Amino acid sequence: MRLILLGPPGAGKGTQAAFITEKFGIPQISTGDMLRAAVKAQTPLGLEAKKIMDTGGLVSDDIIIGLVRDRLEQPDCENGYLFDGFPRTIPQADALKEANIALDFVVEIVVPDENIIERMSGRRVHPASGRSYHVTFNPPKTPDVDDLTGEALVQRDDDREETVRHRLSVYQQQTRPLVDYYSGWAQSGDDNAPAFRQVSGVGSLEEIRQRIADALK
Ligand code: AP5
Ligand code: ZN
Image (cartoon, rainbow, N blue to C red; front, side, top):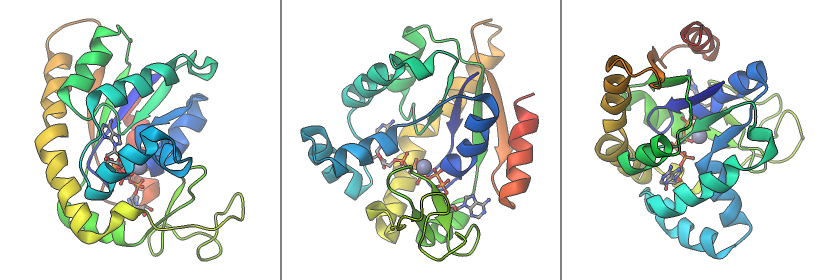
């Protein structure tokens, strides 16, 4: 299974990725998580990326495409993978297409802007794994502690309200065009096109999980 989870910041891509990767036994390839790991390790790439991520802008296509290309060479990608937060621009989608990767599905999680600010302000993450919680909608068993490791949860630096608003506008301008890109490709009759599915991301975590599971049948 090879699929893309598409959707705005805070749509629930990372949250729903957990059940999909478990169900199909595939890794989650989150370019956001990879960049945050580079920031934490203070690599040259991480130091450069942090400046951009803190403003809510996008890291350059060349850097991202290189990161993903290296990641796909890892042995755990043999049976498929889930892309979360990639591709995010038309050039990134073109690079994937040119690599002749046989994608099965593109799933867009649709969430209106008004729900997103509320989700981001209550988000808490486990930095090492990228696991996301929400103080109200998906609380950890113990406040501010990761359920699986017992380690501390933190707020992401880019979850400040003004940064979230900028990320939403960047999404509309640079990433939303991928909806037409993939729905148009799916309708073109090309056998290599992945199936395109849209699911509402408004509702309980369990409801959305069920919608995605149905969409992947
Ligand atoms: P990235 O990490 O990819 O961030 P994003 O796309 O903005 O998405 P988020 O991680 O914010 O949202 P999510 O959909 O995963 O939501 P989550 O499940 O956590 O990218 C960060 C930055 O890195 C970018 O801004 C950019 O600078 C750079 N970058 C990354 N990839 C790049 C690329 N390909 N090209 C260029 N630059 C790139 O859920 C959010 C919250 O809502 C959580 O608290 C969760 O508990 C809660 N929640 C989830 N579902 C529900 C629900 N149904 N009801 C209520 N609350 C819910
Ligand atoms: Zn995420």
